Image (cartoon, rainbow, N blue to C red; front, side):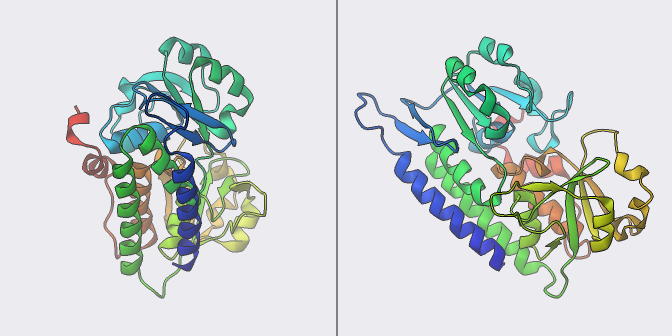
Length: 324
């Protein structure tokens, strides 16, 4: 758990800083606060928003965990309302795919706040700011998850619940790590499908959770100043030969399976390739990270941890009043 303790320490420091920059907004007549997002931009809010639009699932994830009905969201795969959110996104205003949000639909929705993934909205920041106050987070790394949950919970008017969700997850991660076999460290990989798959580095949230359970990520750590993931050829995969592979299930197109090297991998031979849902890509919210923890534990140590029904787990994490 040394790797996770280091990341949680860094995340806790960021949360402490966020608490300083998200306090009451000085000079305002009405109660409010300021948020300094991952662009380094300060956004002033006078009250908890009621119509939050999310460009990514993070806003919906945090809202549902807090017991608040989300308003609008993008999607990852067309026509799919993810099981980890109980399909509830189907009833929200749809804003298009997260990498290409439809700004016309966003404007028509008239949100009072936009919570966005930074890398997919940087080019449109000025347009977004004309529609509504706009807060951008990276939503990529384990070290960022706690800060994002803390700040969004504060923005949505439930700061104490956000702190509780973070503390609970930290304890659950420790509990699962304590139960995992101590002498077994499965080599794993988390990847998008592709002829040259895009694979996630250690610092990615889902990868960090698997590492916290004792797994060893063959993609390794990020380079300084680098991205959270990298293209990893099947030849490189074979050299490091992962025992467990998690593939983001984005549809029927799986070109990696046509490469003869794929069938030589240990994980493929032993039927330990798992096609996983949207929560493995957008893991920073309180619901997603809890379910990834349970699934990763089972897939890494199937003899120790039980199989996971994603929807059944989501039922436990989303307040009953929102499940109708």
